[in-house]
Image 1: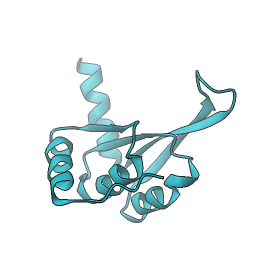
Image 2 (image 1 turned 45 degrees about the horizontal axis):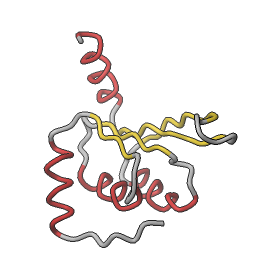
Image 3 (image 1 turned 60 degrees about the vertical axis):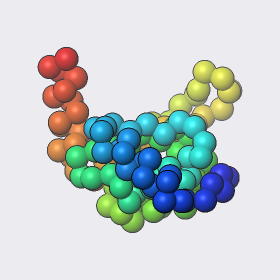
Length: 108
């Protein structure tokens, strides 16, 4: 479990990058810290993708997302590096966020 303290500088950096994105992907440490910040900083029109969202060390952060109004679509399966199943999840607050992102990809 990552234990990165949430400083004003980290919040400022995340706010800057999160505000510029429609889609935020968390696939590196400090995952737990970034997920908790995403729960606070992302708006209804943004989508969050979290790799290894089933990890025991992330369950409190995933719960914080859900308590903040995010819905989860989990994708379970074998990964390329390990012979066991893991989960990557998409989190969103509004179905409109999914529709908006789909439109962006369709218009290409």
